[in-house]
Structures are given as structure tokens and as C-alpha cells.
Amino acid sequence: MKTTSYQVLNRRNDHKPWFDLLQYVPDAPRSEAVASFHLATGHGCFAKHLFRIGIPPTSCCPLCDSNDEMDYHHLFLCPTISAEGVCGRYWQARELMANAEFYF
Image (cartoon, rainbow, N blue to C red):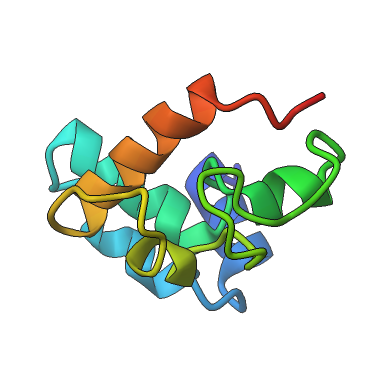
């Protein structure tokens, strides 16, 4: 019997804490689905994740002077991010990060 890519995905990731959350992503509007996936996995445009893969020199938030790691929780604490709702805050942070000069 041929193994489908969905079965492979299930086997490789069913033990990860974000895996159960993925069942809700496909029904959301695209911008919400993308933000939800990135927030659930921690693989979004966060300095903490980007630092882990070797892009910026630090995992601290480049948008404020707090010296806190920029991760999911920091979205709600960063004074620079003012958008409403978790998805709005994610997209605003991503836009601001694209313009931030912290990669060099």
C-alpha cells in the first residue's frame, strides 16, 4: 500500500505540541491561516526563531528596547506593535521586522 504525504506528515509530527492545532488552519482565511500556522509552530518572523537558524545576531526584539526575546508571547508585550488581535499583531510585527535593520 502506498503511503500518502499526509500519512508521513502525521507520523513525523503527531508528537509535536502544535500538531493538533493544525486541524483548524485550513478553514481560516489565508492571512489568518498563515499567521496561525507560524504562531503555532514558532517558525514565524520572530527574532527568536530567526536567531536559531542563524540570521540575526540576537534573539531580542529589534522593534523595542526591552531586550526580551521576540517570540509569540512578546507580540502582546512589545510597545511598538499596536494592531488588534493576535493575527493583526503578527502581521504588523512581520511588516515592521521587514523594515528593521537588525540582520546585519
